[in-house]
Length: 322
Image 1 (cartoon, rainbow, N blue to C red):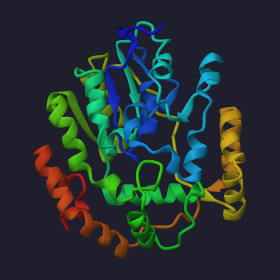
Image 2: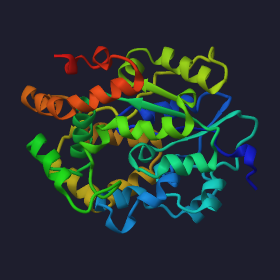
Image 3: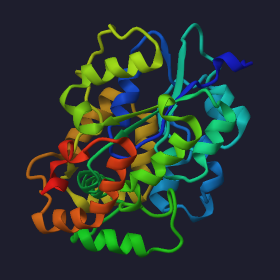
């Protein structure tokens, strides 16, 4: 039985393509941190999520028999699922022992409007972390990921963004939300308003990528755990690559073979298969005209975020200072 002392006291709430997968694996190394075997539970975003409208690819990603998984001992790490029921969610934390920092990471918590209040109602003393990434680069990285995962076959990046933005219905798992996911100021303000700025730690992806050891130390300090712990940064997560054969990749994904293989194949074999199916050679570059389109789109948003954080964000994201 899971006790209150075993339930989460910190949450990483985003963002998509902000490095939360690598952060999950790094934090899990720390002896005083417990993270559940499902990286993204989406539990506190349940009221914002319409499962009946899910994109086919996303529905495959989150398909998991939770009763069977939990009864089987939760031996495999699962990237994402939808853990709606409290008893399933609590079971994910049944293996907490002496760890003081008990957390979970779900990117939906940043954009889903009711998630912050749901987390606050669950634990008003929880600490909140969020990784903010230059929204231009974040959208481009998400587009490349969707090409890799056969969730898009678009040739025109901006057309893809505009078509997605115009989609109806829309929402988490329903459309890609390329543009909406980069509108950080209102999303972050929800957490500031509820938890107060002292309980929220914004992290810049650019700092995290450049000096992960320094950022992890600051996170440990924020979580009040040993900041001198030495993390192993040798393992990389979600490395950029595209399919060697787009048609084959689309078949493997759409048929469900890829999803099943990811869940059943041991990690070393998965890595070998990924090397055979994907390549990081000749990766497409973001075109300047497309970057300018996004810069114009987000310019006011970045100004609002600067005011909210009381810093000049153009020093972090110089594209917006041009």
